[in-house]
Image (cartoon, rainbow, N blue to C red; front, side, top):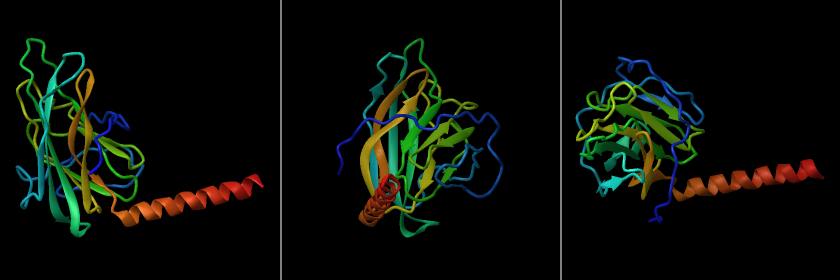
Amino acid sequence: MKVPSRSTVFGIAWALGAPAAVSAALLLNPGDAPGAMPATLPAGPSGDPIQFYSSAATPDDAGNFTAQIDSAVTVGNSFGPSALTFWYRIANIDQTPDGVPLIALGVPVPSAGPVTVDQAAGTGALSGLGVNAGSAISFFWSLSPVLETQISSWHAVQTPFDSWTLRTVTAVGTTTEEVIALVPIPEPTTYVGLFALGLAGFAAYRRLRS
């Protein structure tokens, strides 16, 4: 288990069109541009979650909102029978007179491999998303913000990975705040591959310098 660390919203980009009415999830490779989201998920995590985490109610530093995130992990998806799917929903539980709507959520993902993203229609139905070189996914609810006292629909990220950890994700209103949730991490063999790739790059750099 890793010690939770601070993260930021990566690849912030607005996609203001309505979600696409298609029947398949959206496959995203590292570096893909933002796109409209399909609305095909059921009401909640399909199958029995092997892990569930409900964060503490977390106010942002400016006092604009208080967010709480439920996250879950299920096993088996289009990447394979042992691959993990990560599910997220966010509650805007602030009840102050000037409560701010929640409009985005940033989730860090490992840099290796593609992911598949899907959503459920309803409160917080996604109007778009952004991906930054495969290192994070930013969900946007610009057309259907999560208002004060509301909770968003579930959103799922299918991954090829088989491990998870607790780490901060980023809730966004007019300001941002880090909230702890379950996120994917690469299996050890992936770390070995990434390390080998780094060594190869360093060797190529040394050859160019000599």
